[in-house]
Amino acid sequence: MVKRKISLDCDGVISDVNGFLRDCFYDYFKREMPDDFIDAYYSNKIEKCTERDNFDHEKIKQFLEKYPSMLFKALPELKVVNGAKDGIERLTKKGIGCVVNSYRPSECQGIKQNIGEITRDWFKKNELYLPVNLFESEDEKCSGICNSGFETHVDDNPGLLRNLKSSNNNLALIFYNPECNLKINEKIITVKSWAELTEFILNFKN
Image 1 (cartoon, helix red, strand yellow):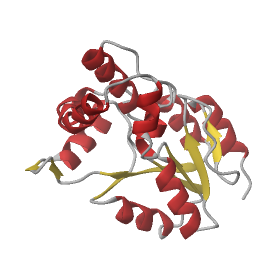
Image 2: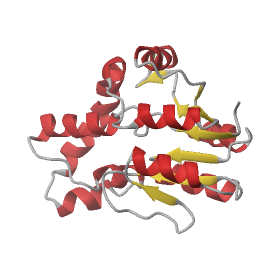
Image 3: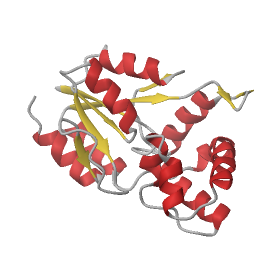
């Protein structure tokens, strides 16, 4: 019996796209990715982040233009974030319904793709049997989360979490961020692992 219902982002929370990004970055630049690169990417502060570490801004731009197609090709083989499967199973056994809400456009760089089908196949392949809702835009994703009776949403995108906070004050928000110590809002909880996330949700009282 489901007692509570929580929303989970896919990329960076369940599928390890951030680990894939780190590997792609190293292959492209032959240098380790800065720890705060992912946060800078989501916060539109890439230029400041990369200038500090003496990266060529034009090469960074070229890399980010190529990355979506690289990610699309790799979607079927992405790894599961460490601890995610065990965490989801533990939450489910405690009567907490986990639902995936993720942004999945129907086009990748102007080319029509079956990204939704690939995503659902990825969950089946990894034996993650969860309801999966896919949205064509981040705005649709926010609206879907706000209007579906969720207690909590977990995401690795700080901008989306800020938008959710301004749209729904009753929704508990968790920033899943193993990469660095960025705090985005005193009312948005930051966790660095699935073990920490699971404990927080199990002990949370709204």
